[in-house]
Length: 597
Ligand code: F6P
View (cartoon, rainbow, N blue to C red):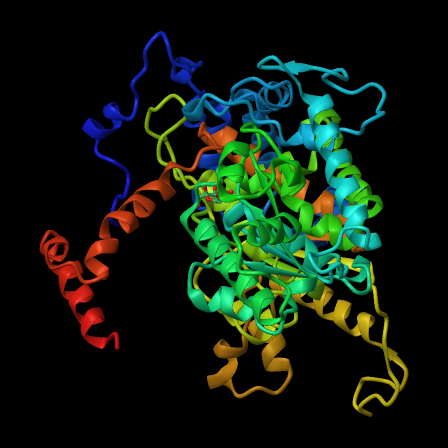
């Protein structure tokens, strides 16, 4: 196997520990040095899971491994776990002090060591008038009253959203806004678009949101196609306001606005008119308000946040402005309350019943002891169709690391490859590999009991689907059937008993023991969507803490960004710049230039 970790000499360079910087923070506990880890390794050696046998022998298994976090019912019983495994995983969490690190995080300690920053996304959803908050209301971090700042910004966004929703805020020609176009990428896109899609039934009639993210010019072209410039509002969402893709797209959108307003006879060809158009059709969300002003957006129309909110943890900050406009402040408050309920569960529940911690521990068990490399997320809720994509950034940008928070090398595998599609579409695409492939792929199945739009199949098919069949019931039958089939499989004898020819029996046999976690919620309300996001944020946190890594930096995305800027002249045809490239890149760029008409 190819080892991808850095050689030891380079690691030393990554660890410039001096008295002055925070990389001298306490070294993480090496999880592999604990007795719990050794016990788990011993159990994993020759481990032979037997979900059929375990369920047969233990009537209490389902109940014992089913937990509640806010409105989320989480059944871990179809996981490859025994009481002994869980006890050791819980001990492991205690040994590395997951609880202590969570407390440090919510109190504003600089647990993002490589950027010397607090990590306070949990502060974004602390209720304005909440009693008994921990830390207490009005806590100060780096000289800043976090609660006051969060709620001042929320109030500003809510007031703006109300104006847009009521029609008080208009474009330059006095028409009310009908389309909000969010321009952002990564955390400034994936969260808002996922939540907008998840909460479509809550979107106000007459307001649509679109999302431009890719620097591929076709993205901005398609997302502005057919729009009326007089009724379009652009939100430039960028934490740094320095992201190439976002700023390029923002400039393209500004050009589009000027050109289209001009064509409609709604804009004079003067600087003053253009500035006035930007003021009515562009707002921004950023931590860099000076750069917002330099772009030409009035800082009055900019909503701030803080460097203690990581991009992929920012969906519940002002980065969600497009969604707040679409669903309204009341629904947004409910959304934030959902996050907070799971934050409180995570803070207060003992590890033995702490859902995000247990789910994170299970992932560690699968990744570090049973050799799983990927993890499927399978929402049985069409409105959650962007949830796997959202989780890809949350999980992989957070935990795809090979050094620990003190700069030392990791001591075990880290990260998982997250992927998925909504059921039942996934069933007809890749489930074959999960059911009968050679790889272990733990999967989270997520479903809600009550669909936003219950429909009945009046006709039925005369072959199992009765006339008047509730379609959500049919959908959920698939959810339950899949987790059952994955857990218990189908033995060769069961296949034979169906009269199958002996030669085909192996192909139709299902080994079972494919682990799943089932997550059920009453309905896809704003609160439940918030709960689901917070659940996964804290799963990621738990895994990162076990591995001793800083889940809140993302240095791994920097090199490609720097090289893209350096390489642009070569791609634009500069022969001298092309000559400096490696032979593969040179040949590829030359071919591209030959093909480009
Ligand atoms: O791709 C790296 C990244 O920094 C993400 O972490 C972030 O969400 C995204 O770029 C966008 O950054 P910004 O919001 O600053 O434009």
